[in-house]
Length: 347
Ligand SMILES: C[S@@+](CC[C@H](N)C(=O)[O-])C[C@H]1O[C@@H](n2cnc3c(N)ncnc32)[C@H](O)[C@@H]1O
Image (cartoon, rainbow, N blue to C red; front, top):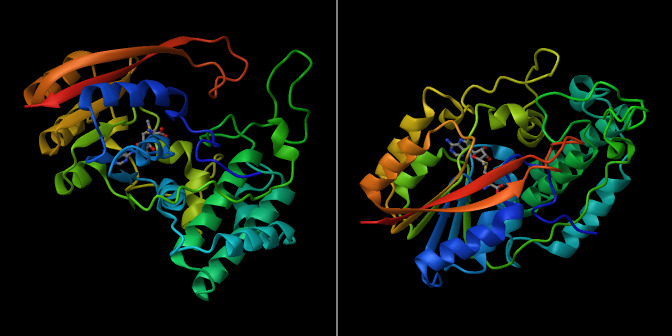
């Protein structure tokens, strides 16, 4: 078994919408072979990965370090910067480690993870840090091992797919007799790392930067924007993964054990600032085609989006209906949402 880039639960992931996004962008922009594709809100990086096989060069970036690490691993591995046989052997060693007491157990044991899995996460993360510190692995091998751990962690987390809270009933069966979701069934399985299905194309660059700063510095023929569309901050939703990835072991606070995330909050998830941030980014963008994914329930109004884009060029909107059932919706009934791609041909 291998971990593929889309094998994680991520709010707003476009994994299920890739056909729609790729088809629309190719129809509007035509031949992509000589183009640079810039995805500054890359998240899981599945959109960037799809274009790595189509465009000349792909640049992916995200504010969160855990996403940066995963995108580095999946998109930037080459035969020169990582020995994948060695990585497979190291993953095997990591899976054999005895669990250890420590930071993960103190902060997340018995809440986000079973105690046994918290001990395993602790032991694996410390060993990866040790190999990195002793220069026993290359920088790229480090990102691959860390990403394999993050994907394994996500599989056994006691959550509904995001970490803003954990399910309260660790130790209970997955569902109560009346069908209430108590615990994710996978929470009790043993943490297990797998190799990653990496792309070896060598045409991607990955950054951990604020989108508004990045687009001002990097021109690209095609700019694909997929900012957050509601007030739930991604640094809150994924704070546990971010903390394990950073491994600075800061204090955590409150019932949900969050660390201090100042500097990671996005303007796009703030009602008062989202529209202004979007206007600023579009004004700064240096591209020929600009595409924006923005869901019909987003906090920036259609009028605001269209006014900003029409100052930049000619605008059309393509739509794709999709049900949210199964993406963090638990056993709730399917709701219909519409995914829209705003397409702007820059004047
Ligand atoms: C809707 S998600 C993107 C999903 C992605 N297209 C995918 O398929 O996985 C929005 C992403 O933007 C990131 N983000 C939020 N504000 C940002 C900012 N100012 N600069 C860069 N990334 C930001 C979040 O961390 C999140 O991963």
